Length: 94
Length: 116
Image 1 (cartoon, rainbow over the protein chains, first blue to last red):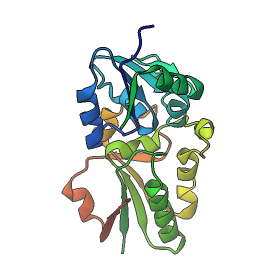
Image 2: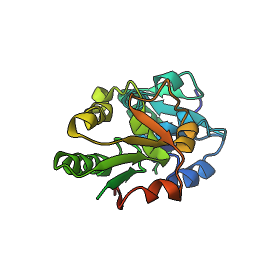
Image 3: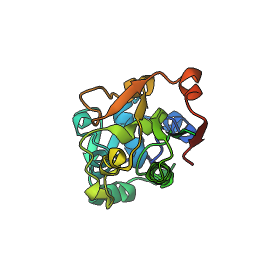
Image 4: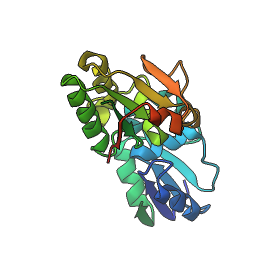
């Protein structure tokens, strides 16, 4: 897998102003990791931007979003989240 | 005097929602009429099958199931917000009434307070 330039870690729900700011900043060679309230983007379906999308599985389960697991994000556990943050050239925690 | 407690923030990220729930339950336990209204990202409180063990929390779905025991009059959900978050009759927990969020809704309550 190609190296992620910037890993954007988004834990804000879709209506939080910072969530929109984050999505604007993601570019093609970046990764977007949804955690916390950020995983609600899987339910709203408003994720059409560039960059590879990851979502933290335990946060999806906590919110009862199992039905949305097949959507456009790669599921990761805590260990893989740590790995991603180490692999990326830099990390932005939104 | 009837009170409407509004929850407009997503579950699990912050404690404000649970505190609002405690406030509503306390009102009801002292025989003060209280209802809950979920809007915006707050409607995600009402989804079935929440399994919060993986993030070391208790499911808010279980918290909410105590509402009728405490005497909460109604659990209301903003219809439009439910559509935004892909929630329908099949995925909502039991006992939720879908309503349109407008001024007429608030007219029914003497006091409305937000969580957080």
